[in-house]
Amino acid sequence: MPRVVVLVGMMGSGKTTVGRRVADKLGYTFIDTDDLVVARAGKSVREVFEHDGEATFRALESQALAEALATPVDAVVAAAGGCVLSAENRALMTTASATVLWLDADVASLTARTARSPHRPLLDGDPTARLTQLDSQRRSLYAEVADERIDTDGLTLDDVVQRVVSYA
Ligand code: S3P
Image 1 (cartoon, helix red, strand yellow):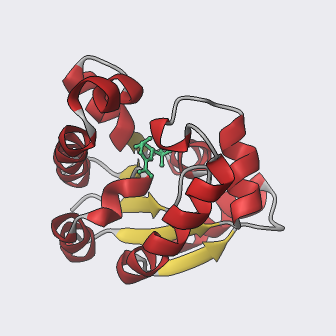
Image 2 (cartoon, rainbow, N blue to C red):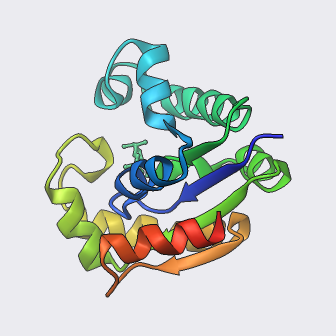
């Protein structure tokens, strides 16, 4: 049975950066559900949202999550921020024999981190307002699937990586 660590949390919580580092440290494969969506759709996340709509994106995201959780090798999975929206996805995460870790961060940190990369269509307009709204809608969903919550505010990247490795 492969060992699988799933990172959940809001956009900008560090899932991809932390996930890559943890995978390197543990010698696991790193899988990002957004990358699987892009590969399957043949276009960027923004293009899927703009050309096909959010519902199509969410369907691709669910397929990507299922594919990631079915990894035959040890893996760290960065589950894109919206993966928890579907009850089916949440059930999949909690029933898979994976360790699910929630990278939590306050909205100011999320805003600062997401400002560096403009590829997230949901944050067009007023990112702080949007992140505040999404965070309050989703907190209970991240809590529902997570085995542990890691409060990343005040921690260095190395600290967060260590913390994740300690739960892996
Ligand atoms: C989204 C998160 C993004 C990406 C898309 C929508 C969300 O992934 O899937 O822009 O709904 O939270 P990251 O969480 O990796 O940024």
